[in-house]
Length: 126
Image (cartoon, rainbow, N blue to C red; front, side, top):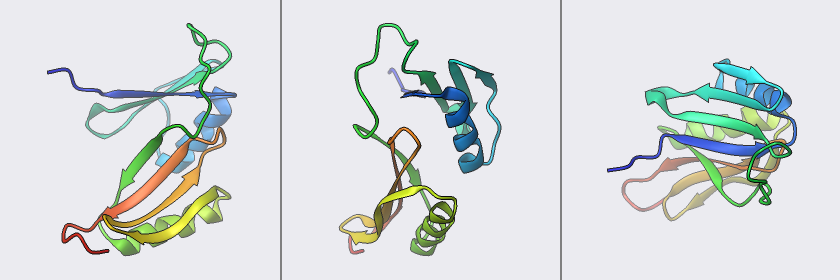
């Protein structure tokens, strides 16, 4: 079976976006160049930041059409992460909210890619 292990976001300034994600993820990229930055995350999952101006074939999509999702262990961890990210100046699209699946919030990166943080309520009631 084919298993995805890599996500690439098209960004305006890869080095600036790389600095943003380095601070957010608490790790340095394994590759950093003016047109591409690469992070290797837990379990080998990769996050690439590729210049939307140099990718071939040309990318026409802009941020906001998908989400990078971060799962946390508790609803309090969701609230603490929200406070941290808001304190870092991330634009918050949705404040911490109880939804049918659990507690969540959504922030935006510098290129308006959506970053969702959530705690999954296994009992089905948030």
